[in-house]
Amino acid sequence: MTQSTTAEPARGARLTPLEYPQKVAVVGAGAIGAVVADAARRAGHTVTLCVRRPVGDLTVERDGLRHRLALPAATRPDAVGWTADWLLLATKAQDTPKALGWIRHLAGPQTRVVALQNGVDHHERIAPLLAAGELVPALVYIAAERVARDHVRHRWGQRLVVPEGPAGTGLARLFLDSGMDVVRDADFTTAAWRKLLMNVAANPLTALTMRRIHVLRRPDMRELAQGLLSEAVTVGRAEGARLTPGDAVQTLDFFDALHPHSGTSMLTDRLAGRPVEYDLITGAVVRAAERHGLPVPLNRSVLALLRSLGGADELGLQQAHPETA
Ligand SMILES: NC(=O)C1=CN([C@@H]2O[C@H](COP(=O)(O)OP(=O)(O)OC[C@H]3O[C@@H](n4cnc5c(N)ncnc54)[C@H](OP(=O)(O)O)[C@@H]3O)[C@@H](O)[C@H]2O)C=CC1
Ligand SMILES: CC(C)(CO)C(=O)C(=O)O
Image (cartoon, rainbow, N blue to C red):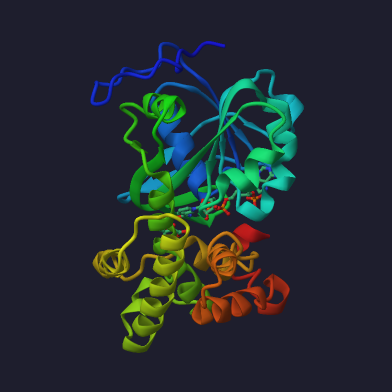
């Protein structure tokens, strides 16, 4: 073990980089995996991509420039000869159980397993699956999409939000000077629900209509988005998040300011004929609403629609998006 991440610097103190290059395993070299692997590589760490299919010459495109990652990729856990200091888990939530082989092999007692996934219940979903190591939930403010098997377009955002504490500080130090901003938040419940608001309208509405973010600018879709967000604010408050109706307004303002061709991770999956990740977004709102006896008719209807979406075969999209072949 080479890191010294346990000492918590005083609040406001300037962070210092970790003393030695860290061993970083990125499980799932898709859109987010590629962007964080690129940042960890730029920070000087030893990074290995853990993939289920060979990934080739992975490239991240940002502001029109292409960056070749040139990182080693392993297709089997036993091909990696070390225990990770950091395991960055960037699979879709429904694929986490299939990634357990990597986690069990690469995580030791000192490993920090960073869950780079959407949703509000990272701990409940993932911590029970770990045999060793510490789970660190991370809220991902990055928009990226796989435009080909080995080509990721990074559209906007380089921010991760993590709970305040030694692990969060360690992650901030890991990414120091890499371009990836790691924000530590003492009220992670509120932070997580605020991030969920970014997904609860935009992801389903782009995926269901198969249109990019500009779809939210139609008056009828805007009304629906406002309704979905308003329900989520009420449920988030019941869960202890300090949200106000202003958070819903700010979320829509944020999307209004984006390039109209921005997408969402759910739209990318839908266009590629992959299963969409509804359970940790709309599913989380509906489950929490049930716990509190709150009506969420709009989210419930959207959940039914998302659950009913077909896969690639039914959509006939496989050939149009060869990266899924
Ligand atoms: N994309 C975005 O802009 C954002 C995404 N997020 C969240 O980040 C998480 C990751 O999303 P995203 O990067 O878009 O997803 P992608 O689908 O682009 O990438 C997921 C990757 O995981 C790989 N994978 C799946 N199972 C395994 C396995 N058993 N072993 C190794 N690799 C595996 C997939 O492999 P294969 O290539 O073989 O399918 C794929 O490369 C999600 O929870 C998403 O909601 C959050 C904010 C924004
Ligand atoms: C914030 C947003 C919409 C960025 O892409 C996202 O989290 C997602 O696509 O899942």
